Length: 320
Length: 320
Image (cartoon, rainbow over all chains, first blue to last red; front, side, top):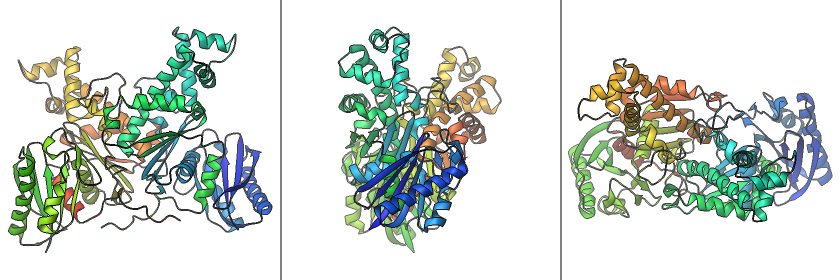
């Protein structure tokens, strides 16, 4: 049996996953070491343990990192995983196990999982993960699109509100300030501050936090103020999708991340908001899906990528 | 000698161009017929005349259309060329000349000319034409990227100013309302209306029009108010490029169209504005160029495309 191992390195934990090309055989999880050397060792140990447990022949290893990963597999930026910056995490694994190791952005890995699992026929798929921030990945013609430097498909830092809220990246008005899971909470707190969120404030209680999950819960109960915040949120999701649609022209857009738990309540509102943009509607068959992706998506995508080739670093295919 | 013919259909004229694979052999120009049948005939006549004049063997024909062109080569939207909507303009030419005919958006053709002429080594090239509106084209790994429906690379209708100026497309705050050549004029007139453009109003004179070329002329003379408008304009150009850079991750961005006549005055300001966006700077080698492209770019790109294959409609390349 041929095994692929996917390693999704998060800011707090590493999820390791073994895959046989058809299904997930098992997973394991450990806290993310703060130290660079220990990080590399841990990846190696997790891989060895899974290979041992599932008694297969290791074919490849995929690593997902929460940050910008260059085409050389080295992380250039990783605000939640500073230890990984500048490291070639694939090198040690390649040496020890003698198999191909792919390192990519975690959202690219999740996009690959969405493509392979949920939309294998998509001509152009855009995956957007609405979580703490916004991650993204683009699959074109059955291949992950990585761009000239490996940083393609990162729509969270498009500016959708000139002079808007200050993003940790240093820019003003980034999409992820409004349309991420944290953005939903931010919009809700703005509603409370502006007197449009008394029910949200009441539900949060004294000293409680008005956040995205609270909005989701109240909206599920039909609370009008929560629903109004959700409408506003869907509008911000849509405005970024308009840019993605006009640039990438996808046939499938997959929305995942924590906010995906809102399910149809979100999908219906996003589609309704998109309907007010003529350039999105005209002549396209656009399928916007909410996919849970789930906590394993990054590790699964990394495992699936491990035995496949991403493009962007490839030599140009023949033309003509 | 093998000939390719490029036909760039504009709202007012058709430019036809003959190319031998190395250089432009000659061009011809006629007014654009308003009638669909006459349009198809005219394309055929222009082609026949150029083939006859240059005594070559016709290898392929490329057609550029100012509108959204489906992967089937049929125009779906064409505000400036309504006669072409729903027509398969390639069909008649294919029948008469027995050669491959490629039909694409005119900005895609121009992007292809920019790639082949100015940046053949680009891993990911984004071309943006700043004219009446904003056109665009994306070349990835040496192939034109057309998206799932043929509409990829149309950044003019990204929303960069929520609740902003009303675009003819029906959306509010589209990029092309601010960053096209017409957008430059619009910003200048707003400056006049707000009392920041006395010199522009004076230069235009009684009943005169404050437009982009006027701003360019006065800026060239060092007029502070014109230069301030140009700074503001460069800021709007930059905000759209931030989205393109974060989504496509190009190594080369080519700015063309009428505004390209501003040359270095524009390039320096756009680069300066881009410098204030950390997500654009970090870890990338991004080359922003102003390329005149010139009035022949669409026809030239169409001719070059004629003997080459665009991707997007292709079956997925092998993975793994």
